[in-house]
Every structure is written in C-alpha cells, then in structure tokens.
Length: 88
Image (tube, rainbow, N blue to C red):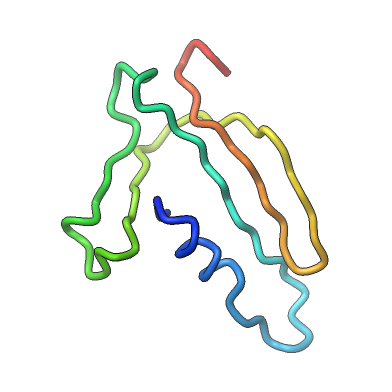
C-alpha cells in the first residue's frame, strides 16, 4: 500500500493482457492517525527497497468501512476508512 496516490494509480492501471477478465482495483484508504489508541499501521518506506513508493503496512485485524465503490470500464475504485474498534 502506498501513501502516494500516483504510485497506487500506476500499479492499478498497469497493462492487462488481452482476454484477461480480471478488473483492476484502486483502493483509496482514508486514515486519521489521531483517532487510534493502538498502532494500526506503519510507514515502512525507510526499510523498503523502493522508498519512493512511500509504503504503508497495516497490522492484521484492522477494520475498514466501505465509503463508496465507483466503477469505470477499466477499473473499480473502492474508498475505505480505517476504523477503530468502536466506530465501524
């Protein structure tokens, strides 16, 4: 997962082989770090082979609320919000 929308879009719009019926999905995740008492994610760019991608790593058992799903002919964009245990 990247904190840079341009990097995420680059990966989600990469070329698909002719006849491939899978859809490209762009996950737009909204995070408000001030609302979390526990550590739910970490910026791991400092330890990445590709620091320019600004990678974010999520811990297991996170809860995401689906805000919207938008479809285009080539891509599905899913907007999520990271929730705390009391707000989902």
